[in-house]
Amino acid sequence: MPETLYIVIAVVVVLAAIIGLYAGSKKRKSDRFRLDESTTPVITDEEARAQDEADAAVGTLDPDVIEDDVSVDEAPSVPTLERPESVPSRLQRLRARLARSGSMGKALLSILSRGDLSEDDWDEIEETLLAADVGLEASDELMENLRTETKVRGTTDPEVVREILREQLLALVNPDMDRTLDTVPGVGDDGAHHPATVLVVGVNGTGKTTTIGKLARVLVAEDKTVVLGAADTFRAAAADQLATWGERVGVDVVRSDVEGADPASVAFEAVAEGRRQEVDVVVVDTAGRLQNKAGLMDELGKIKRVMEKQAPVREVLLVIDATTGQNAMSQAKVFSEVVGITGIVLTKLDGTAKGGIVINVQRTLGVPVKFVGLGEGADDLAPFDPEGFVEALLS
Image 1 (cartoon, rainbow, N blue to C red):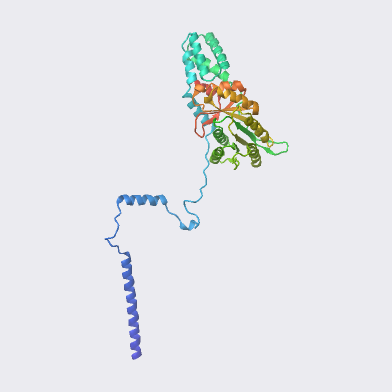
Image 2: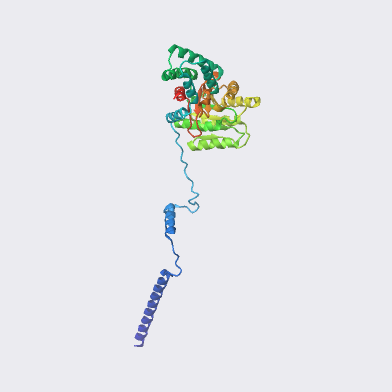
């Protein structure tokens, strides 16, 4: 009997302990989730909306896919390459921009439409042509042809006058010149790949580096593979600028990490890299130089000779600031003598008061204008279209 009593007492004690633990646990849980209204923060509607917006901006992240040593802010991103504007599209856009500022053509049309022109009128025509940098020789030729044609046709009809002027200007611009850029790679005597190599030259301030970056975009838009050479080693900013242009369209840039390094060595390595990658085109930038500095001009000749040890230099493009007018002519002559210019790139041709330089520089050098720039946008460079240029002047 006593043993039975002990067992009953033990069971009662255990049950009492269990009931006590359960009650304590329930009380603690109740205390844990109970909010003291006196200390509860009040959240305004504005704060709630701000929190909602912050939560939406962060989104939801799966912690299992985030590595411990990489934060969200520092995660590397894959660069998105730009797709440059197509050549036909930019031609149309640049032609429209040129037409909006066709001051030379408008002035000539206005004078020629007066009818029976006096000598004062012809003097005004000559002044207009010279102010537009057409050049004295070309201006004389144009005026003589205009006099003859207007007398032969004997009309003051604006449309007829416009057609006469269009024909004469187009003849001076010379649409028969080959304006294509040689971008077809070849094969050397040793059977090795030879990229089409382009050397770009000019004086300080004409925008050579920017022009090369824009030219790379033109080539990429035509599905050409390209390597750029930063042989302007006197300005670290020039190499950095070229690298930025290249990164935007996925084009490699060969440069030196040493400021003032031998530019010919950089040009040599750029062509060598183009051969290794078997790209279509290699374009090499050079430092701006004054045409009256013999040492710098000799160095330019050296750069070209060194490049040709890797592959023939197919094109030498001279970049000219169209706003410099007649000063560009002396530049062009000297550069042509040193490195043999094959084409002209006219930058800043967004005011056609200087549009006559197209005629003048071609007559002076006997080489065509191949590209024109009409703005600061990345795709504001296009192949030169003689017919479109003349039509824009007279529109």
